[in-house]
Image 1 (cartoon, rainbow, N blue to C red):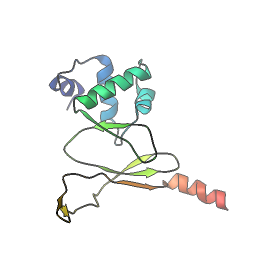
Image 2 (cartoon, rainbow, N blue to C red):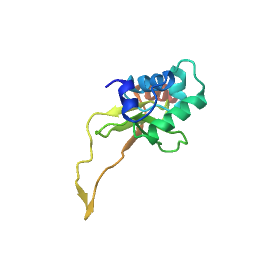
Image 3 (cartoon, one colour):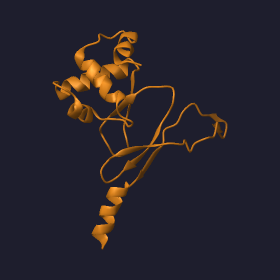
Image 4 (cartoon, one colour):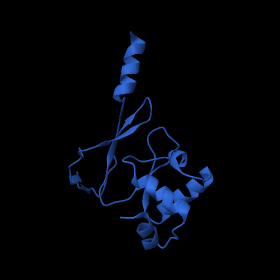
Amino acid sequence: MEANKILADAGLKCTRQRINVMEILMSVSAPMTAENIYEKAEGMSLSTVYRIAEKLYEKGIVTKNTIQDSDKFYYELSDDSHRHYAICLGCGRMQPVRVCPVTAASVDGFTVTGHKLEIYGYCRDCENKREQKTK
């Protein structure tokens, strides 16, 4: 779907800056912080990126999450699927996990309607760096 249509369907004006943020989020496979979006954005301030990301969140166009031990919000486009990520403790890179390891429909009489799973460790590059330091 095109950024213009998503914005219009949500009742938002299709400004150049909103379209730019939408296109950035549509081009990546992992959530991004406002700072990450700002680095790729053209001709807008960080505060503008924050305002746009928050407006997109309010309208349900993006989801907003935090990860363990972080005070930053991560934004990604909303859709009907859910995703899980492996998060590198070295560089912070978030890699999508292809298969959902949670398959239980209920937990001791508690009906599960959703879940969030974050896996922490080290990506190949960071693990290689850690191994070199210990040699």
